[in-house]
Image 1 (cartoon, rainbow, N blue to C red):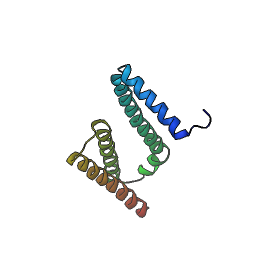
Image 2 (tube, rainbow, N blue to C red):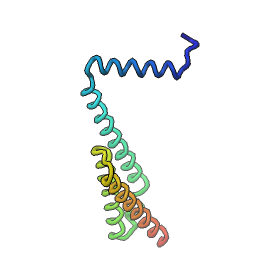
Image 3 (cartoon, one colour):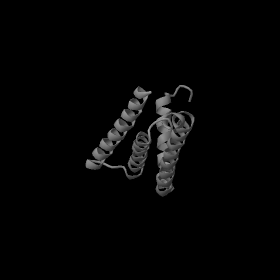
Length: 121
């Protein structure tokens, strides 16, 4: 057993787990776990973004003009909604194109606003 290739061993473990899922009819449980993991990942991204904003961004954004702050927060908020839509609906085709266009616009607006405010200071 010690001379077995790790790749082959891992494939055997994966095949055993897949066989157990099929034989025990656990597809529903597997799908539920997948949704919960996706939700946990989305929440983890939100928590990291919040901590970044709380520690660094809030003090800097408070010094900006009201309009710039609102534009920046709107871009970030729309980006979060766009990311949530991507995670939970799995768009394809034109919907995926819309996701990438909206994400690019949000990133451009946020970075441009931040850069403009940094250059004014």
